[in-house]
View 1 (spheres, rainbow, N blue to C red):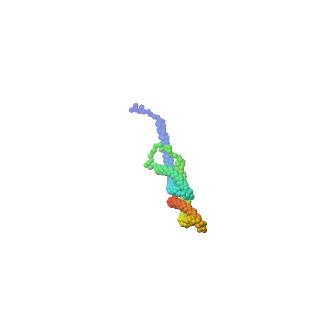
View 2 (view 1 turned 135 degrees about the horizontal axis):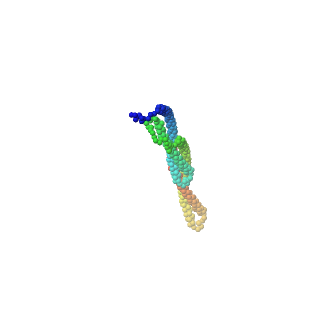
View 3 (view 1 turned 60 degrees about the vertical axis):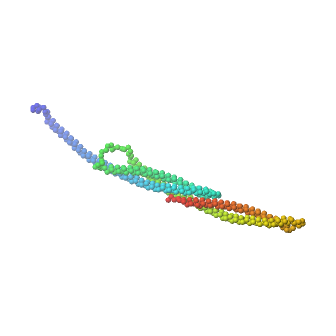
Length: 402
C-alpha cells in the first residue's frame, strides 16, 4: 500500500488552480465560438433560405416570361401560317383557272387552224388571200400568244406555290418546335420543391453545342415570319396578276374571234351576192342561147327555103339558052332572071355569113355558160366552206374563264 502511494505524482495547488482555470477558459472560448457559430449558422441559414427562395422566385418569373414569350411567338407563327395557307389556297384556285384557261385555248386555236385548212380547199379565183384569211391568221397568232403567256404565268404560279410550301414548312417546323419548347417550359415552371419528378442530375451546368443566343433565336423566327409575309404578299400580287392576265386575254380573244366572225359574215355575203349575180347572168345567157338557137334554126330554114327559088331561076336561065337563033335574045325577062339569080345568091351568102356569126355567138354563149356554171360551182364550194364548215366550227368556240 505504501508503495502505491509513493508511485503516484502529486500536483501542487497552484497547478490544480491553473488547470481548473485553463479548463474553464478553454470551455468558455469553445462555448463562445460555438455560440457565435450557432448564431452565424442561423443567420447563414436564414440568408441562404431567403436567397434560395428569391432566386427560385426569380427563376419562376423568368420561366413565366419565357412562357409568355413563347406563347406570343406561337400565336404570331400560327397567325402567319393561317394567312399564308389562305393565300396559298387562293393561288391554287388561280392555278386551276389558268389550267382551265389553257385547256379552253386549245379548241379555238384548233378551230382557227382547221378553218385555214378548210379554206385551202377553195378553188379558182376564190382561193384568195382575203380579209377572212388575214383575220384567221391573226386569230391563230393571238391564241398561240395567249397560250404561251398562260403557260408562263402558270409556271410562275407554280414557282410561287413552291415558295409558299417552303415558307409554310419552316413555319410549321418552327411552330412545332415552339409547341414542344412551351410544353417543356410549362413542365419546368410547374416543378416545385415537393414535386415527385425532381432528382439530382449530373453535369447539368453545361452549354449544349446546338444552343443559340436569344438574339439568334428571335432572328430565326423573325426570318421565318418575314419570309412568310413576303411570300403571302407575292401570292397576293400573283393572284391579281392572274386576274388581270385572264381578263385581258379573254377580252383579246373574244375581240379577235368577233373580228373573224364579222369577216366571215362579210365574205359570205359578198360570195352570195357574187353567186346571185352570176346565176342571174347565167339565166340571161341561157335565155340568149335559146334565142340564138332559134335564130340559127330560122337562118338555116331560110337558106333552105331559098334553094327552090334559086333552082327555079337557074333552071329557067338554063332552059332559055335553048331558044333557037335570033330568039336567043337578051330580053327583059333574061335580064330579070339574071338579076334574080344574083339576088338570091347574094342573099343566101349573106344568110350563110349571118349563120356563121350566129353559130360563133352560140359557141361563145355556151363557153360563157360553162364558165358561169363553173364559177357558180366555185362560189357554191366557197359558201359551203365558209358558211357551213367554218361557221359551224366557229359557233362551237367558247371563251369564258370566269
